[in-house]
Image (cartoon, rainbow, N blue to C red):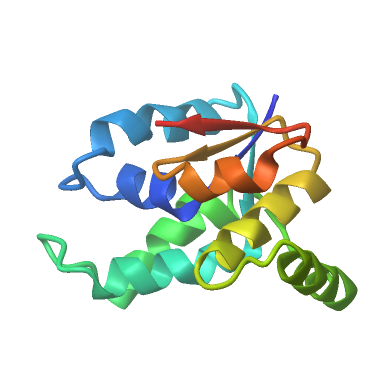
Length: 144
């Protein structure tokens, strides 16, 4: 089984004070136990770093701690998926033809990475845009 985590799931798994921590952490542990292959969009790495280092988590997450969390739980564990310049532009064309604008395009980037990696599922805490973007596509959305 191949599963791509979006940033919301990883952040919740990393931050003990996050309201969804107890829901997300077991899935990260399953990935560490090799119960499935974990995939992450390259874009997600910096998004996680940004949120971890700027959100008002208690205790505060320093850049050094954020880096360590990303190394231990993404870089050393997940397969990182990225798009080529041509794939990015094709995504712009898709967004234009679907008349999508704003923040949904970042979820579209994650969906494209999941499709490129031929993952079975995307795990997220926020499924609304993912459901719109995967209608008719061979990928399931799992909302934790």
